[in-house]
Figure 1 (cartoon, rainbow, N blue to C red):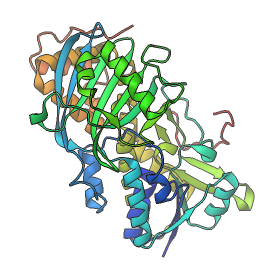
Figure 2 (figure 1 turned 90 degrees about the vertical axis):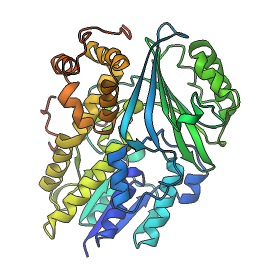
Figure 3 (figure 1 turned 180 degrees about the vertical axis):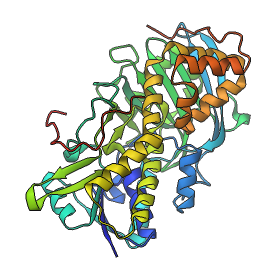
Amino acid sequence: MRRIAVVGAGQAGLQLALGLVADGYRVTLVAERTPEQLRGGRVLSTQAMFGPALRIEAAAGLDLWAERAPAVSSVEAVLAAPPGVRALEYTMTLDEPAQSVDQRLKLAGWLELLAERGGVVEYRTLDRGGLHELARRHELTVVAAGRGALSGIFERDAVRSPFDGPQRALSCLYAHGVGSPDPAGGPRARMNALPGLGELYLQPALTLSGPCDILLWEALPGGPLDAFGDAPPPDVQLARIRELLAEYLPWEAELWTEAEPTDAGAGLFGAVTPVVRRAVAELGSGVDAVHVLGLGDAVVVTDPIAGQGANNAARAAEAYRRAVVEHGDAPYTADWMCRTAERFWQQQARHSVEFTAAMLTVPDHLQGVFAAAAEHPEVGRRLANTYAEARDYAAWLATPELTAAYLASVGNSSAGSQVRLGDEDGSGGSCRQEPPDPGA
């Protein structure tokens, strides 16, 4: 039985470990927090899982909350320009429902499931030396921890990393008692764009105490929506949210009069620098040298504005699992690691990175898509399903010419019009082996 170590107990690491155990591998997972610590801690993310990722979980028997989590089939989008005015509205309809499960609930359950299924779970924090020692004892070591002491293990890929700093200041709150603009219409996500200020996303979800709503501010740094830098407690956070909604999105403010935080850990704050890192790192030297393979946020970090993070993690874990199984008894060389990671980058991850960058910068031709979606429901449907299948970005959103051709094909007479929202390069070689930059 081959020995594999996985470091990191997020979506990618746990899913990979569970999959490999089911395939007959001897797996050791290193996690920093126990199930009890996860359930009793602060929320971890604003995850929304789309159809393709949910199907991967279902096929692996990991969809433990599918019957309880709200099934979201559409997103109601509003352009507020000027603030407080609904200038443009459209609906984005998903071909397959999306779901969101609080990762405190999900990851704690998966950790317990891994132990039940025969995986070895070690609760500890690893530094570079500890990772080196772990890798020497296993035939393959996969690092799925994108933060903390191991965040500098993998070198930043400057060519593939679209930004050198955060593009949004983030604030999220899990809440009970949020009203619905259409209670009879079933669970729906909502997106409000405020030109020059940022965006507000609302996502029905399942948390530890039952169904809830997740609010996420994507604020332009330094603007009026960037009002949570002091990481206030949930009750203070909620009070500020109500003030912002009343001033900038009054139709949403009406729905928050009875809202309350789900628990003491319901708030999350921060900023994300989108980055792509080289997926293979060398530890030690000479006869002690070992290579480790990066997965999930350890390699690709995207801003949550396009909802790609958890979906990329799920798909990367499945791609790596299949690569391990297909590799049979052959050694896990650095070359094999490079080819495995590069294949996933070319097939999936690069599209998510480029789609997310477009949603952050909103180029002129994407503004035209929003205008067309308000007039043609099929445009809104295709945009919604690009969130679910980011590879479609390359077919119709990657360039102004592709977008114009698509809009013309749906009979959009205003294909060249724009809604003003405010003022694939395959090179780079993700497998080049160089020492990481300590300042990266």
